[in-house]
Every structure is written in C-alpha cells, then in structure tokens.
Image (cartoon, rainbow, N blue to C red; front, side, top):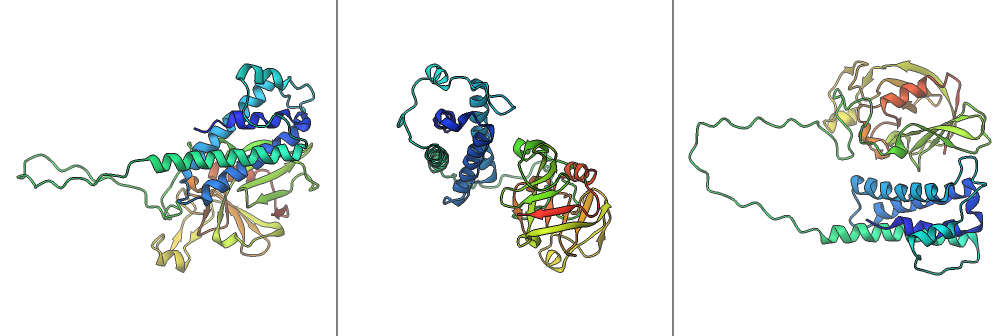
Length: 320
C-alpha cells in the first residue's frame, strides 16, 4: 500500500495549513485526482481497488489530523508539525517550497502518482490464471449433485434487475459515500439541494456553512442535467415501469413493478419540474458512487427517506 501519510505530511508544513478549509480543499483535490488517475490508467482499476486506495488515503488524512491536534473550529491552535516529523523521521524530497499553492499541487500529484503506480505494479505482478486441468470423467456414483448457486442478476454497470431487492443500504459502502454532515460554504440559502454530479454527492444546505451530504449514483437519463430546477412532486414507494430499452436488454419484464422493495425507484421519489428528471431510491445500493446506464439521480433507500423528510415540493435543486 502506498505511504500516503509521508506524502501528505509535506503539505501541512505550508503557511496556510492552519486553515481548516484550506486543508479540506487539499484533501478533496488529492481524492479526486487519485480516483481519476486510477480510472484512466490501462487497464482501469476496479471499483474495489479504487475503494481500497481511497481508504488508505483517508486513513493517512485522519492520522495527520489527529497527530497535529487540529481543532474542528478551524485549526487555530495547531501542533508544531516539525515535532511530528521528528517522531516519524525525515520525509524525502525538497524541504522548502516558496508558495502554498505549489506545495498543494506537488503533494496532490505525488499522491495520485504513487497510488496509481503502486496499484499498477501490483496488478502487473499478479500471476496469470492457470487453466484448470481437464480430467477424464469417472464412473457415476450415488453421491448427490451439488445444489446450484443462485446469483442476483446484475448488469455490467452493477445495476440489479427490477423486482430484486439489493437492500436498503450497502453495508460495505465507503464511509465518504455515507450520509453525514459536512462543512460546505455556499451562497445558496438553507434548504437548497445541490447535486454535484462529478463527485457523486448530493447536499442539503443547512445554516452556518454546514450541509447534509449523501452519496449518489448518476444514471444516463441525467448526464446532461444542469442548472436550477425545483421539486415538483414527491411520492412514497412509487410504482415503476420498464422502458423498452431495458426490456430489450433483459433487465426487466413488461408490466408495472409495484412500490415494494425491489422497485428500481426505491422507497421515495422526488420529481423535478422539467418533467423527466428525478431523485429517487434504488434497489441496487452498490451502484452509489458510480455512473450507470439507466435512471437519473439515485440514493440508497435509507438516505432517500432521510432526504424526503428534509425537503418539500418547491425546494430548489441546483445541479452542477
């Protein structure tokens, strides 16, 4: 695993490291660029590999924050970073960088480069699978045949067939995709919903620079969605009917799926005022944080119920 701790430690010696928002932006940029690097390499990293590297990076961030004793109020009383370096040993690389922005950029590039290189090296080092040997069939015995293994039908993008319940949440979901309050500075008034399609986050703005953040999945019907919309209507456990394209791909059968677990719209739906876009739950919680072929903006069912209880018809929805 890449030593993200040593790489990120260089940045906290910068003059602006005492500012919580500055550090948050640095960490977010490192996360974004790392994921982009892993997805764009050849062959692309799998979702589990990306999750593993993200967890390692976030663990390093948590360690730095803990050791430096940065306060949640903005980091006015910062522990001397040089004392941390004395405990951990010297960090290789240049000891001085003239500008804070250059430090942040250098650290981010080092993080994504190291993570991508390490993952690529491990991938290349894995031995090629050995073909199973073909044995001559033996005479039949009285032993019973093993029971067939039943698997949940999924599409290549991870979507689950209509009518199959994948659960109200994903117990293995990365913690940064889970519902949580977070620092968020915006000029939008409290109560506004902001959808960040690039980062796969949905925010409900609250007072005092705080927002409730949810991980989301983006469907092909909303890849072009942008600008200001409003919630036109809301419904609990809506019915769902497959499109002709889904029927042809054998992801659903003709007919109406009732509003029960297994419904692709999930537990709640918030229809937007353009008449075609929506925010809804899902029967495939493992697709959160990804982009899929069908649908619009999706949350796990536990999160969409929470969101449903925080908003109302007419709530503005700003899509970035």
